[in-house]
Image (cartoon, rainbow, N blue to C red):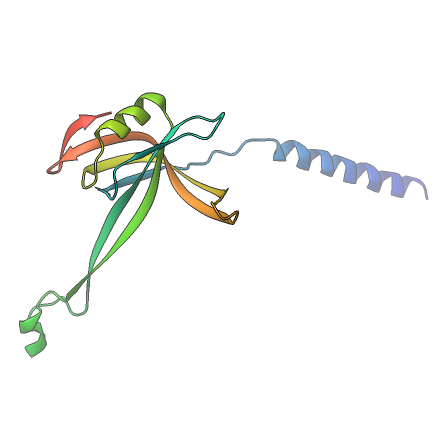
Length: 157
């Protein structure tokens, strides 16, 4: 009579311990972003009291795709637009640069309209605006910025 409940307690204890041990194993994951686009505004340098300075700028990326009939010779409409309609979408990204050397060079040399390649990680956070309203922000924390000119690498920071 007493053996069965004791065995069940022991079995649950062992199961709980094994769950705890496996939950302590770290899982590999990845948070990497690569963006190629044009700078939307000159960078600004910000520093909150007691925290590291940061260089912030916006980056526009562009996507293009074809819609509709893309085959040549599909009637009178294909003569007017043989490749279908071209649609595009521009997405704006907030880029934050914290690394000291990269932060300073980016602030000094990146300008509105510059074509750059950014590598980093995506970060979600909250901040309080001037009116004490809590807002959510998505930003790319840059690890690397490469300046491009006409599609070729010109200068790597």
